[in-house]
Every structure is written in C-alpha cells, then in structure tokens.
Image (tube, rainbow over the protein chains, first blue to last red):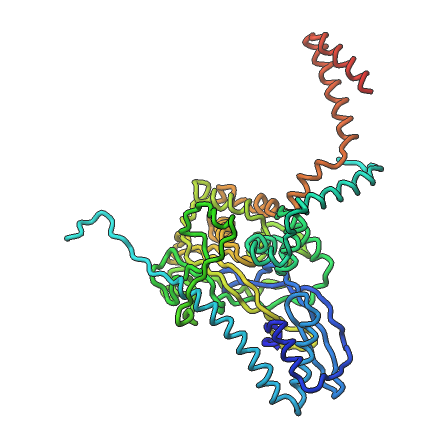
Length: 141
Length: 375
C-alpha cells in the first residue's frame, strides 16, 4: 500500500491502462479528503508532538470478485486514492496477485527508487570536506 | 470595543472586485499559474505550509496566488481551509533518522558519518542580484555524482550520545500523547510537546527575533548548530479499519538540533543540552530559530532562572501565532465609533476640568465650540 500511495499518479494510470480487463467495483466508502495530524519527536527521539496536518484522501471499494481494497494517499487526488484501492483489491486476488506484484508493485517501487537515487546523486555532488585553517601558529613549527 | 454596523454592502463587494483586479495586475502580462508558484516560489509555499500548519503544496501555492504574495494572509487562508476537513488519523511520529536527504550540515563536527551535504542552499552565495535571471536565462544544472549519498545518516546528537556527552531525548510514557493545541487550549506551565507544536506553527519573524535575542545578551545558551538536515520522510498511519500501519506518502521536513552549553549537578556530570526545531518543507531559518527558542523555554526542567524575554513562556507562546496576532492587530480597523465617542466625551471633560483648575479658558472655550459644531 505504501508503494501505491507514494507512486506518481501518472505511473499508476499507466499501470491501470495496462490491465487486460478493467475490473468493475462498488464503493464501500467513496473517496473523501481529510486530514492526518503529523507527529514528530522532540530531539528526533523523544516525546511525540504535533508538527501540523497533511491532507489525505481515502476510499474503500469492493471488486466484483469480492476483494476489498483500501486506499489512503497523501494529498487531495481522489483518482489516486481510487487506483491505490483498486490495485490493493486486485493484489488480494489469488489469480492476479503474483503477476501484479511484479508488473505493478515492483515496477512502481523501482520507478520511485530511480527518482530517489537520481536526486541523491545530485545531492552527493554537493558533499564538502571542510579543512580547518591554522590560525596564527608558525607554519614551520 | 467595536460595534455592529449596517450598510456598505455595495462598497464592500466593489472593494473585493477591485482587490481581484489588483491581484491580476496588468492584464497584458501573463497570469502566474499555481503550479508555477509551487515549483518556482517553493520557499514561500514551504512557509505557508509550516505556519498554516497544513502540508499540501498545491493548496499553499494557491493561497500564495490568492493572497497576492502576502504570506501571513496566505497562512490565514490555509488555516481557514483546514477547519473544513475532518481528521482521519494521527500519524506515527516521523523518523528523521530515515530520511531521503537533500541537505545535511553540522557546525559542530567537520567530518561526520554520511558527510556534510550542502544541497541547495543560499549559504555561500554572494547575494548579488542576478541580472541574467531578469532576462530569463536557463537554470544551471548540477552534474550528478556516480553514486548517491550514504544510506546511513546518524544524527549528530546520537554520535555525542555514544559518549554520554549530551542529554538524551526520550519519550515519557506517562504523558498523554493526544494533547493537541488545535483542540485543547494552552495551559501553563506548558509541556515541551505543546511548546514545540506552538513553535512549529509560530511566526518565523517572531521566532527569529526571539532566537536572535538569546544570542545577543538576552540569553545564555551558547548554541552550536549541531546538525541541520532537510529531506523527505515517510508518513505512516494506522487506520482504524485496518489495525496495522500503512504508509500514505512522503513529506519534506527541515530539522535542527541545536547543541547548547552544559548542565550538571551533584548527581549528574555536566552534559550538553538540546534545543530542537522541526518544520514542514524547506524552512531552515525557522527551524534554527525554533531550536533556539525551544532551548530557552526549557529553563524550568533544566533548573535555570527565567531572566530573558525568550524564556517567558506565556509571552512567547501567546504571541507566536501570526494568524491570531494579525487578527487582533487588524481588528482595530473595525468600527469603534461608539467607543471613540465616549473617549471624545471624556477628553473634553478632562480638558474642561484642567482649564477650570489651571485657567486656560480660551482653549476650553474653543474646544466647546468645536465640540458643539461636531455634534
């Protein structure tokens, strides 16, 4: 579910378009946007405290084959929540699970990782080594 | 005290239309789009998210556009919007040790595991206006390294902690984790979690000035920027209907660990003390100021005396919120006509009495004539 939530919507749409037959489903809970209070910790490790809220969109659906899918995605995209829930349901189908795990989940995780790695290599280019300058001492000593 | 007035509907409607005209500016110039603001004014967007206390870059960018770049107004818009949404959950505390790093520096250690990563920063720029930018020059591009940054990015405070040189920050199991200033009013003395929530949404300018004051003789903390890190962390929640944790997305945060001079007692050897800053988005100045003020406000638990303005909890926490502050200052524009009439009456009376006692009859007569004319 994390991979589906973090995926770019365009990548999810591509994965959806690549499905052989589009599954039909009923809403258990149609998409709705709300908030999540995000907590941090004092000093990074201590007492939890509220940093602020983030928008989140959630939905629940049931496919015709009976699987229930849940989507919780940060932001306000109802389509993103819908596709996340739909793939969550399809991934529970014994018939499709193995294939979708490779074709969708692993592929989306790979795309995410590729973007992360590309950004990381640029940050790495800004790594600096500071040298402490000698102050006032005799350089020959 | 202000009073209700009637009338002015047409003038108000027209004033709002004129405001919108002003927002658009010269119609011969292209209109700025929300995604342009999100991508190219990202630090304005970050400030609106942090102080608006709502992580949503698209909404914050819209607020910047609608407010014509008045960020306090944009923060107000975002705060108002958040009241229209239901809260689904509280996240698990984000883990800033597991971060996709964009920037990470330490002013305390030269060489630290994971390295010093400048990332995108205004530091070391010459602050010269870039005239070529006015001509629309293309952006510079950095050449990526062959490898990414190290996966391990230990906190500087954890490194100091290996030697026991710094106080630790641990969770208090007794403390009610649901305390939330957006739902329960602030009570004094405030606990650190409440103070940090207040500071995280507090006005950057106010906290910057207070933090600055602690460095300039109105404080005695001797801070070092132990570590500043910025990057993307995962947000997880446990939805009621699922009962297990799921990741819902990623947010960018800035964290500052300020290391301050020692605290010790007969029972405990001296250790460095800590101040902490954490904000949504790219808000380094704010995170640093927040860490300075957090440390100043910790005088009670560290057995210090409150001697400086930044240590005055009520003063700091009651005045940090720019939506409240702006509202109360700007309410002075509301009709205070009745109030002012009573003030007028009072000052005329006082002046008349003054004239009676000390005899400047001419002035008093003039006042009376003018008062009658005004009525």
